[in-house]
Image 1 (tube, rainbow, N blue to C red):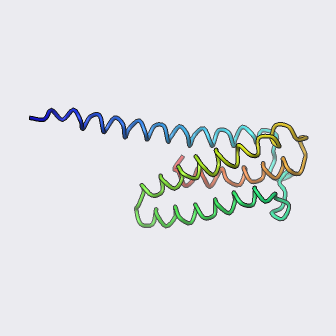
Image 2 (spheres, helix red, strand yellow):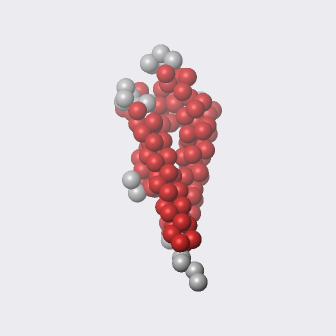
Image 3 (cartoon, rainbow, N blue to C red):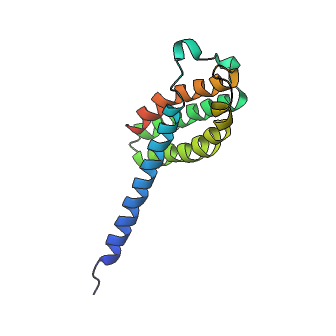
Length: 135
């Protein structure tokens, strides 16, 4: 006779994983927003040809992720949307782009082209990330 206690443990683990992923996503967006405090897109944004290679790469990744998520939404494959966004936030944004750009965001002069490039890329990502995630 089974008590079904294994099912509760599995459900709790799945729920915990979802909560951790949700926190990771919110924290990534929080980091992006925190680095835009002195940034006005109308006056501080740099043109696409002035973006650094890293910033162009992250925007290209965002474009690919957006296409993938739109296709998944069209197919009602919400799990794929979640997995794609979670991977993008955890690896491409947090582990790579944010980590690599920390020095220019915190150490470069306020109006340095490298810092403004990173902020321009961050500013372009926020609305799209939030829209795709339903935040």
